[in-house]
Length: 273
Image (cartoon, rainbow, N blue to C red; front, side):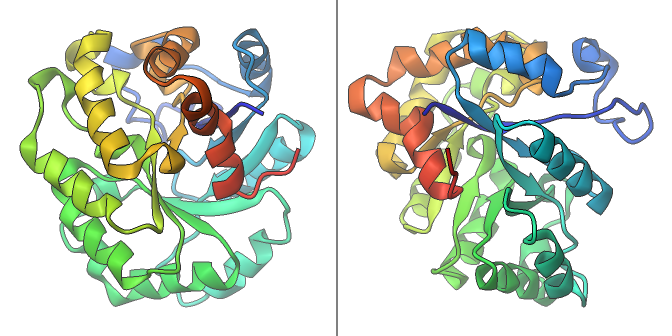
């Protein structure tokens, strides 16, 4: 199977979704499973993992309901308050849903030191009890903090979203490269090759801009720990789904492509057919 490990659904709310600016007007509308199903089929994709875009349990409920109604949604990475005293109770509740695979918090918007908090780390520790993964959404300046986190939980499964959002139009950032390499030394961490096109200045990109970043990720994680993610519909401000997938098919070949486009996501998120 070919699996898109990272996409979103929402019913657009201009207050809640204020992060979708006027510069991203293409996505200031609803995006639901009916919008994605044909796109996946046209691109020979067999399924996807829906990832939270809002920090609320209502969002998690919303995604799990969609996953129950649509078989091509193979898993959900939802939001649970990892800092809460009752985090285990909430995780137990959501793991009653077979397609609940992991948790994400939008740490890129948090201050330095967020991942060092004892309450946050208590929440991360609880994930292992329920065999749940954690998606790391950060900016490059937070990579060293992420390294400390994954080092502290060697048995916890982590995946880095969007390669920590490097500024792809500015050329190679050696600090980002060194930190990515350091993060990848921890074998409990995988990496999503996703979200790169929207990190380009003014959403203008070309394949050559991205190749150097793909090489860093591949050399660091190997193709055994890389997962394709479209970041649909966010990607639409910079590229069509077909173009995002072609970044993968132009770079990876043969068995490597098969792993990155599906096998790794299936194994990481424990996806059933």
